[in-house]
Structures are given as structure tokens and as C-alpha cells.
Image (cartoon, rainbow, N blue to C red):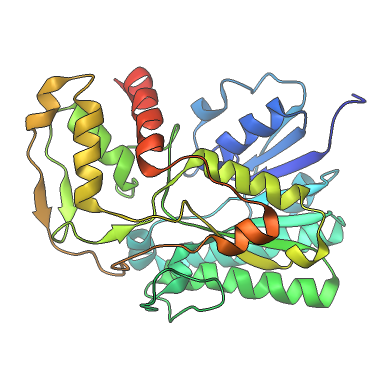
Length: 326
């Protein structure tokens, strides 16, 4: 027990990002508490460490303040990942999205404040940039939100800032840009584009690209995100907290680029995939046309140095999908 570094509460710890964070921090000598209601997370994401004596799973909901208070007990840091993602889901059901992403966030922030945690790090979103057209996206320049989801993630930043100023709790927001990698769910109506396309290609089904394929994204591999979360809780510079950081690779690729890479790397496992055609559909409501992050602030203030480009990350992710989902 003497060599335990600290205790981290990871909300949404059974989800894609949360379970990867849990696995990494357990392997790095931390105690990890997971709070999840399994609405979008999966028990199979926990199988590699559920028996670890330094791991505690609490089944609960961030919308229930009592669950938040219980989960944060004894935690030194909070990595708040619990949220309902997806722009289309928020357009279809803005009330539930708001309940989880705003009320749930406020519950966790309040519980963390009362428990006197050292730092509250939370998953913010590139959707906060909204209709701002400038590229690359710089943290201090945002536009108006284009979806209910984007509103909720911006409100998180506002609450974090107010809690820092009013109550003195240290907060850091990480604006995630299109995160992908191992354990990302390819199923369901709101599956992210990369795992969804991978599964379709593996079944020799044609993926549907929204629009003409020229929308671009700063696709960010999960290990870059893990690095940012670690930097956010270990940073000792008081000037680097109580702010937000882009969490990305700092490069952009179009959806057409993405499809070409997927075909190339998947066809190394199954040559027939190279011939699977792509279908083009309508643009999706609420989508930002182009997204590219400036990561200068994270490099300067946190020492961020992302290791995985889209191509590097895809090679890793596709290998994982092929071996685990085929």
C-alpha cells in the first residue's frame, strides 16, 4: 500500500476513454475508483482489471448527488469522463443530454469541492468552438454552439471556471478532438465514425460518409488523451490550472482521407476490403465542417507531446479491432 501514488475517481470509467484511463493509471501505481451506470459503458471494458485490488467499481449515476458523494470519498483527483456524447443524440433528446452533461457535471463538481479533492479534470469538447470558422482552433476564441451537446459542454467550462474562482477548487478542462482507439464501441445508433466504419469494412459493407467527404477532423488517438490526463493531474505549475486545453494531435484529415487509410490498413488483414465501395449521404445537422486544434498552449503549459498521428493510431486501433471484434 505504501507505494500507491494517489487515488483517482474516474467517472464514466466503463466507457471507451474512461476504461483506457483506468487501465493506464492502475498500471502506473494509482488506486482507481470507477463510477458508471453502464448506460453507454460496458462491463467487458473492465475485464482486464476488475479483480485488481486497487480498483473499486461503484455502480451509480452522476445525476444522483448521493452517488457522486459516495464515489468521491477518499479520492485525490477526479477525471470526469461521464457524459452522453453525440451531437445527433442531443438533437433527438436534449433533455436527457442536459441532465447528464450539465446537472451530472454540477453534482460531481459540487461533490469534489466538498470532498476537497486536489484537482478536478474534466472532458470538455471541441464542439465548444461551434460556428467559429478560424483554423486552427485556439482555446480563447470560440463561436456559438451548433447543437444541444455543444451547449452542455460549454456550460461545463463555465461552471468549472466559477467553481475555481468562488470555491478555490483546481479545475482543468480537456477539449477532446475526435478521440478514437481500442475499446471504442462500433455498435449503436450513435457509434463514432472510426469504429463504425471499421466494422462495416470488416463485414464488406459500404460505410456512409456524411456529405462529400471533405469535412475534416483532428482525429486524436486514445494514448494522446491518456497523456493529457496524466499531465493534467501531475502538473505542479499553479499558472497552468483553472483553464482549458485542446487535446488533439494538431493535424487534420478529411473523411475521404480517413476512408483511404482504413481501406489500406484493413486490406492488410483482408485484401477484399480494398474493393468495398463507399456511399455518400447528406451532411449531418449540427456538424462543424472543419476542425483543427492548436496544441501550442498544452505544449507550453503542460509539456504535452502527442506521439500518435491519425495513421499511427489507426494502425494500432485496427489491429485491436481485428483481434477483438472479428
